[in-house]
Image 1: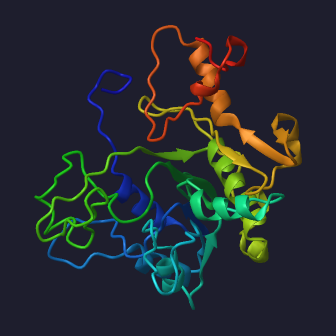
Image 2: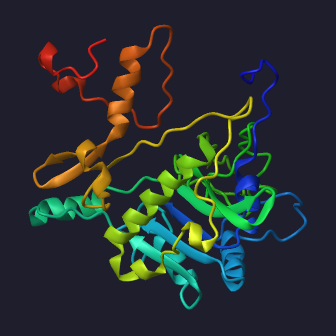
Length: 329
């Protein structure tokens, strides 16, 4: 139920993202572990051919919308084997948009100021796991202004993620999942027989000041990791017609949000105004606000703690004495 005690009606992640993309007039920024151009966001009428993400983005770019895509550069995907070991579609997505006004940057995980072995390990093993969309939206009552909104969470815009609360294993093989069969658990399964792998994860829509935090995150990563295309970032300022001070009070089914992350200066440029909040170790600057947020709230909890996380791997095996514990409760 919702905070008001009524039955909560969850939104539709895929339809809401599609509506937002179609409504964008200035820019669309997409970043993720995987981005698949053949993904179909709206799967309503099974008798029709559904428009793919690639089709939509090409159409929006022809309308003059600035579109930048940053996808993890999987080292094992090549011209010979474009699918790669992890199936991120980075090579396929890059080639799909070649020759168009859509810019795709294959973002490697680099480790600077280190030996060749560590650098190779980082490039082939470690990934960038941020998943989000940033775009502009209308400002009610002011047609001359646009505001920054977006989506972020745990769901990549790629194959296998489209699902419903029913998590059907067989019933949608010839309908909703006819062009999107995925089963990473047992790769020998096929769309003709199934079962498909169901998918459960959380994504959120954000607007207001937190959207500007996410915008700064994308821009500062783009500047650091793709400096050759720095000029392609759209200047998002008041002078360009953006309402950067837009905000509102949350409704009964809305929440105030705060943005945390785990990232270092190998991957992002840190604004000078936050350097006093950033740790430094071995010549690198670190933003470890996720860890700090966990510790802060766990320590202060009085009634319950609820954690839902795909990767919740602690380091308690290394906490040899009480003094080293960062969350002693």
